[in-house]
Length: 420
Image 1 (spheres, one colour):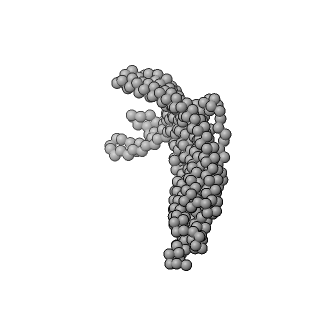
Image 2: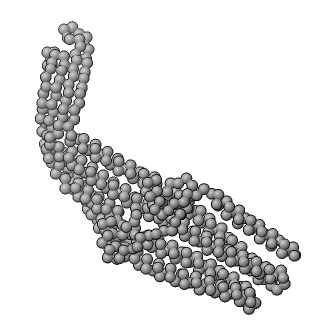
Image 3: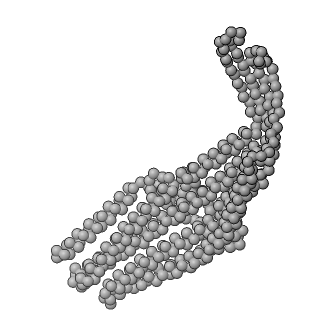
């Protein structure tokens, strides 16, 4: 064996060792495997954005409690002690009282309570919509990992095929029935497929990392099963369901209802308020104050002039109501367009997948025929290399087409509000 042949053989052994070592290293990397359903559940419970959204609901509930306290009775106890050093004055004055305040007519407080409840519903709807967005992101990240697994499989098969072809071409050369061009061309194709495989493995790690970040895991996350998406509805069913099921539409509808209530309740700024106060006291009796007793008071307040504050509130709430109405109308039109567009994309994605799979079958047949002709001595291996490349490209395109079809189905479910 010549020195050049020894060098190529040694290089091939080193590359194979590196590939095996790289595979072993990847196998040793800590991985958390999750199913499709587990990924959706974890992103909804562990992602920081989802946790913050849940706490915002708690905060809104607390604000409702605060607003409600303004029209409920309050009871307070007070005590005092005064020491005076002067001739003819009692040196120690003690006092204690218990005061009860009951809002009898409190329109502003009532409406503030009601509006706080509306705001809590908006926050709840918004949290649901945040969950929908997170679930969609996790679903797409899960599909991205699945796609990269397919690309790694395609690249690995291409490397195995190229390695087998290189072994055959190199063996022919060693036995004096081949030529150096075929040998070099086959080796070049092998090295190219090795680079493609490494790039696909790197892309897989990046996809696993993105999924891990979404799921708030401390290590890489890999998929544990195939994706089983629900069957898409018909166009009529999708159009009917989208406006009622989509969480972003419900957010807009809830916000629109809240602004409508704000605008409707402008009258409270013109309404009177009536408070009842009762107080029991026990204090040191002096010439200026009683000893023991109780008293009750009714306080009626009628707003007459407030400097134009009420008119400003009316204009502000009218503007908010019109903004919410416009946003809801625009969103409903957007939903209609999105649903129709996703159906069109799904149809073309399915057609593309059928064509891609047919292309794979044709490319594999062409590669097999080219290899058979080369082994029979009818052609050079340039036809074999070209056929293998075309087969690899066809399989890669088929993997992309499969991902496109899955993504299109996921987009349709999201657009109709059926996911998650």
